[in-house]
Image (cartoon, rainbow, N blue to C red):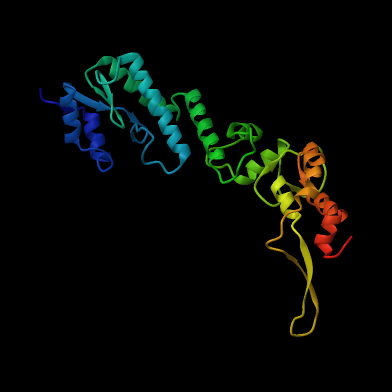
Length: 277
């Protein structure tokens, strides 16, 4: 049997051949399937692609993947299993003499010339999953128990590829979370109050002993500088009652509380001022 291309496919190969396989490769595929003539499903820009190539944005890739998988589903429903009247090789090829396959291909092309989506539900689900991955893959660490879907539900009109870290932070703030002032951990304050929230580790770090040192520059102008002891140990015993008690109840420690507790304790007073309380 001499395999041939349909006239439409011949024209398309001439036009898009630099981007796709050559006519001879298509003829080989046709002969391998024992078809007399082979054709490829077309969209508005050429051959319908699987979404893995030639797309500059993730949104375009998701749209292409949705249309491609929807077209495959239509072929399966109308023409049976893959490899008989149609096949999938990164684009959709079909037996140009099979009426059912021709009807599906024409249906796909006609739909895409009138509207960019073959299945809005399928596309919406794929886009949602991609946006969830976008949020969860950002450098921002989400709070425990919160996933990308929780954040997306707080955003008014999220768009794939357009979700910024500021938008995620605003969404988390709207959900009642506050970020530690010294690190990227998210906290859940139970009461509204002003101040600088701290996670447990950063609150303990705030209690490291400090001293007042004097620096005299060349012009004689005395300047006081607050210097942190690099080897000083946090005042864990002083702060633990606060962290396990009130800080836990309010969902976060606060810098001003920590400093007041350190100054008000004998151990903290000695550490700060270097003399007995």
